[in-house]
Image (tube, rainbow, N blue to C red; front, side):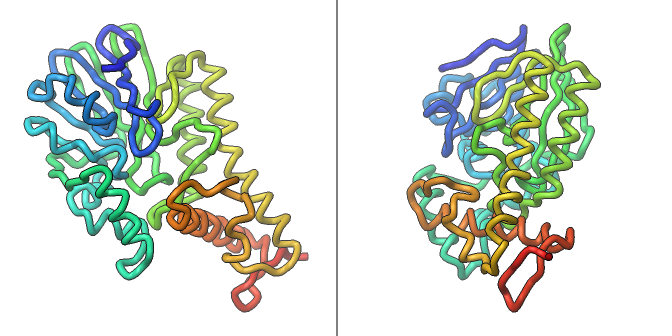
Length: 302
């Protein structure tokens, strides 16, 4: 098992393929009460834990790369924010968050889920913002940070003299925030990242972990990376405004490099994700009064 000791009782379990999708990094709290945050590190990694001894499995949110090995932890109390419970317990609900039942994304999600041998799992405990756990020496606080999903959460973790924040899928990648599901929300994402920046400052947090990248150390470095990550949203918005100097439909904007410089395989899935993300930007620009809707095409207001 590839794990990195962060503090006396807290370890980062590196996901297979360096934590890239369809895997994720997990946090293991090895205290009197044992807890795992997310299960998607990969079968080889998770099987190296003493799974029977894990008391709590906390899912940061309901996306498949974070939950696909939940069913291996048979004795654990599975926890997730109340807004994401349905998508963990039901494959159909998870797929509906990617698109309506008759859409192409449904069959594409079947492809992704088959690769993962995905099975839905029970949820025993519904979480809310500011819920707290004590595992012995380690204390954990739930921070509801919607945007990436409606139930996405980060976690403030105190282990004796060490304080860290697990950012989950506020993952500080160079790609930036991802909001390609129907329950994603750009405004909520902006608010959530801003909230985390404030928490890092006020609580003097010097260690940040995330689901897909390496550990970041130093309060100022964490804040810089969070601000750069946040600015990706605004950079995308500025690019859309430039392109809308002339009338364009949503479909006209897809494939222009606003979100993906190059579509990964399967290309159709990522084209759909990009379209959803652009739609969310266009809706936001309409609300802000910066563009006009001209019979289904959009143009910057003069």
